[in-house]
Length: 203
Image (cartoon, rainbow, N blue to C red; front, side, top):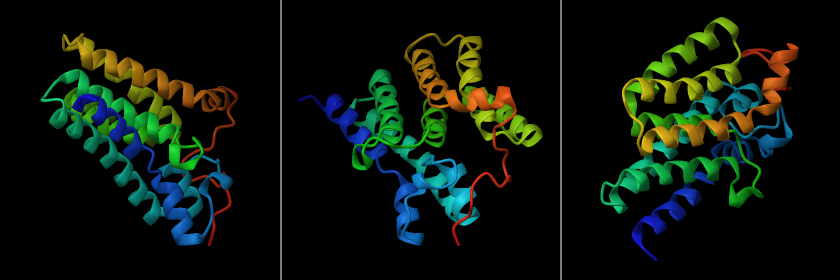
């Protein structure tokens, strides 16, 4: 088994560490996936456990993505495809974690870590617009979708049509698939807004 293949497998296993599930069990003895929106991510952690745990989950999930890319670069000898595939593997692990019966989150925080490490400025430009959309609409899901939609566009504008461009498209497909119910709720005006009482907080 070559090092790049080992790297991809390790990154999937790393991505499978669902920090929201782990923290919710450690702090409150609950499964975060049975509360709030049922999603194992930072936004639902905020809704159910509060700001502190949510910030910690967000940071750790982002770091998963960063670590995966750098591990891919290291074990892949700087090969762009290896780094990109390791990032994708971490996102797949987050979305479908082997440790938690393949029921994970939607992968946006890990996606931020992956994209920011692979192609910082396109991700930054898309991220700024995404954050502004969240500020004005308070829809985190909409901001997440805008982020993954605009990043490949900014890559294309910069003239990047290599591995990173295709990686951004693959990640975008994952994100839109995981947010398909959110898209329906946004259209229907039923999506929970940031700060709304969409789920009962555990105290």
